[in-house]
Image (cartoon, rainbow, N blue to C red; front, side, top):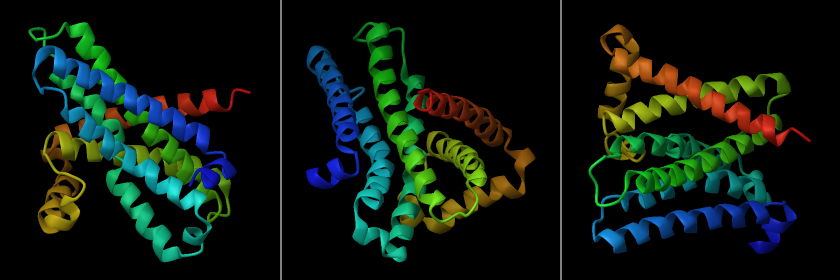
Length: 221
């Protein structure tokens, strides 16, 4: 595994993201030990869900055997799409900030933002991978930025489904018809669900601002 990560220039990125994840875990454990409350331990589960899209695209890029099997690639990319909204979803955990808490609000802010930033990085790095994978299958590279913009809006709609309707990524398997009904209802009757499309629009714009800023920094050299 280390040889493959090194060969595909992925080792440094993996170590960095692993370090960020451990830092987030350390902050949450410190809070738990200091306050003896489990309030924000759930952030570790959310971060694990954010890690899955990055893991999927990493497997595609570093494994020649997977790249030869279209069925496997399709399965991994479908998994990526299901779990991608979990990466930016952690931003909405800022809703849990409270002035009256066992810890100072500044600490809880640092804690949540650390998880949110790490989750966003997992998501953005994996979306960058999607662009690289798409470039090999789409003849015209000029369409790839449009694909990324659309996927970020799809991700923001997924955030709405998770935050307000409490759907999870695996519900597509456990409760597919109920999930499809909830999505279809909001597509067919958009004006009856202003919060759904308002959040999708503005969260999508926000994610695009962050992602393309990220890409600008990456290309700065």
